[in-house]
Length: 140
Ligand SMILES: [Zn+2]
Ligand SMILES: [Zn+2]
Image (tube, rainbow, N blue to C red):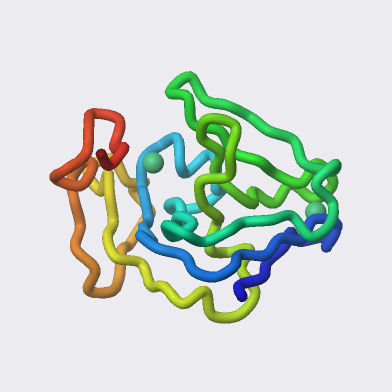
């Protein structure tokens, strides 16, 4: 069981049982969304179940022109999860309590990273999306 929540504690979620495909995207949209150098995001693994424990009514959703949405706590502003087709697609790794059981597997859109961003670690870096993605970086 993976648990997480926002900064103020109003919103809590749990995942039964795993995350998958953790990545950091350095594109300008993710920098705005996550308020940092990149996203730090992992998908709900196939066969795993995401559920809100508390505070679901404190969530606000924003959907981008590309069709991807985020949900964040309207009290403290923590970005908690990514939405796709009205469903939770994955969570922001910064909101997970403890060890999420995954590590960043790749850095994407490194070609448009912020000038102050210094990427460490040994995960592969892609100038744009990963090789099997479309133009917006969505892996098919
Ligand atoms: Zn909050
Ligand atoms: Zn991005």
